[in-house]
Length: 165
Image 1 (tube, rainbow, N blue to C red):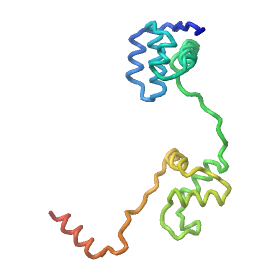
Image 2 (image 1 turned 30 degrees about the horizontal axis):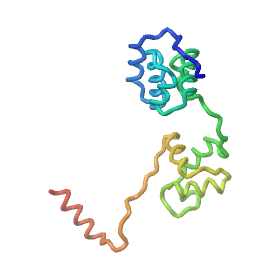
Image 3 (image 1 turned 180 degrees about the vertical axis):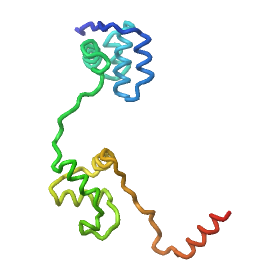
Image 4 (image 1 turned 135 degrees about the horizontal axis):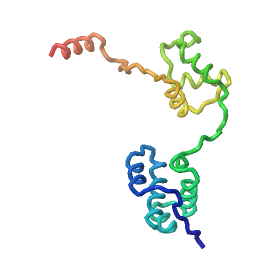
C-alpha cells in the first residue's frame, strides 16, 4: 500500500508556481513540480507515473520539502573521490606553459594535461578535466588547424581581399 503524502509546509500555490518558473536547475524544477502537484491533491502513484519516476521518489522529495523547504530540494554535496592533486598544484600547472614543463607545444590541450597530471600522480578522467579547468577559471585555446598542403601565401591574400571588401 502506498503511503499518502501531503504538503505540510505553509506555502502558497503562487509561491510554488513562481519558484517553478524561476528555477534554472532542471532537477530542482522537477522536484518543485512534484510538491506543487501533491499540494493540488495528486496522488504520489499517479504523479510518479506521469513523471516516470518511482512513487517513493515523489514521497521522499515532498517529505524533504516539508522538513527543509525549498533549500531541501537541491542536491546535497557528495563526497566523491578526493583529488590526487590539490587545486593549488593544478593551478600552478595551468599557470605555466607546457614549454616550461618540457613539452614542445605552446598551449595546454586536455590530452596533454591528462598525460602530464598522470605523471605527477593525478589521474583525472579526460572528460572531467574540462569541468575542472573551467571551474578554475581557465579555458583551453586551440589553434585553428591548417591543411598540410595549404598555401600560406594564398591564405594571406584571401584574408587581405576579404578584409578590404
